[in-house]
Image 1 (cartoon, one colour):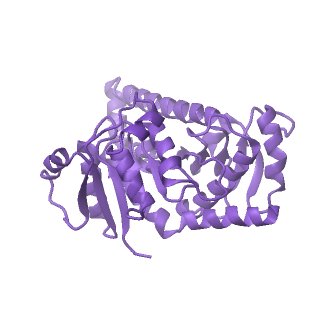
Image 2 (cartoon, helix red, strand yellow):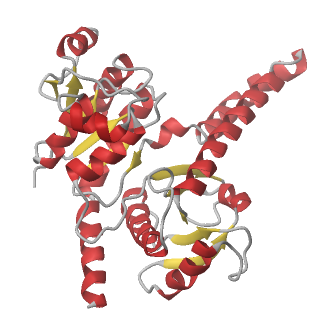
Length: 340
């Protein structure tokens, strides 16, 4: 296996494309020499942006794609009809082994559909979940599913727990990560039908460190390393998390600038405050991988800027080096053999 990680980046996806996508790619290759980025999209537009920078030309290549899938388009129809779109072309590169990963800030629906239809699931994976790192008092936790499967079964959540544990241990570096299921109370008998069915299944697993239920208010405290739920709850948790975080940061800054005394105090605490607030910046943690596919597909925020794009690209290098897909495949196949 090559030491170089080849990444197809959707240069046309997201609110700030192509400028921030291109800048993120240039920033990433300057930090990580063992990376090559294929900027997928309209060649003339990408070339214009690239002309602004000095970079190692062997690490960036443009792959022309004439079409763009817009956010409002029906995902299935868009994937089927726009075969020369940046999303379809980039995902086909992963399917054909020309790229190790595909990254996009574009249409979430198209990325989810394309990931399953074009890249395909690892044999035995029932539903690939979107997994997002979220800041906590103790560092970070992995929330999954945060957007792919609004309706899920107990068997899906069991696989989410296993795949999340692999990702947290080998990408983030947390040994024997704890796993909790989102619930409305700590007691085992609480919860809706899905949680009640899933809880005993997780409890029986020997290959994960299941610690029981986790209430939403405990997630920011870092009560558990891997937070498992279906995507309806997960997406609400993620969006509320981001909204509250943004408001708190805004209010802190507003308060510090409100009087002369507070401004003087702000100057004194600025280095420590900046470091603290940085931990609540979503762009620091890269994108959300769609786990359980035959290749790596990562969704970044639609509003992603260069820093998030750069961090996501570097995240892909770690994913490949740690052989996450191989570990997930081995885990799922072992389960299949055990079930026979």
